[in-house]
Image (cartoon, rainbow, N blue to C red; front, side):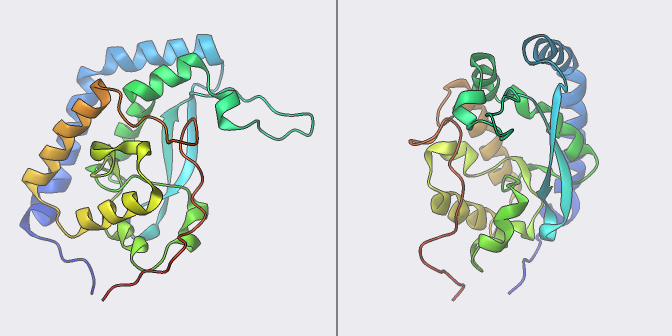
Length: 213
């Protein structure tokens, strides 16, 4: 059964996203400028990091973030592990979610929403089971149900279950509850890292298949 949109999702959510992102860009423009300058000074160029991510219905788009890692490589030219490239400055950016601010541009052009499942790596697409793939039935979000309730401290399966639960319950009240809970989580610096990684370990597929029904 496909995703059914309610009145809020059909007529209010997208205009609300645009206005929120536009207002955030205006209000936070001094912060964006300061962070950009600091990244340039501490990490060099490029200031921004871009990567292809799957969006609504799995359509690929370019996501932008401020850089938080160096480009250090080993003797074979391969990038070093995240924990070795993530600087103290980068950790602070992630802890405050300031590295995510360039994603406001993705919201303005309609590739992302303020609230929705976080856009993950393209290489994960074939690893999702039928249940998990439903996270792409809505636009990916700047924040989401999982980010407001544990961030990287959650397992992949827990995150995906929350993503699909969100897909099935997109409401005005729910979105604003997630937004306020996200602010609280960021301020308390909760769930920045997983238990086993400086960021979040790779998703390698679920141990058990799960389908609808």
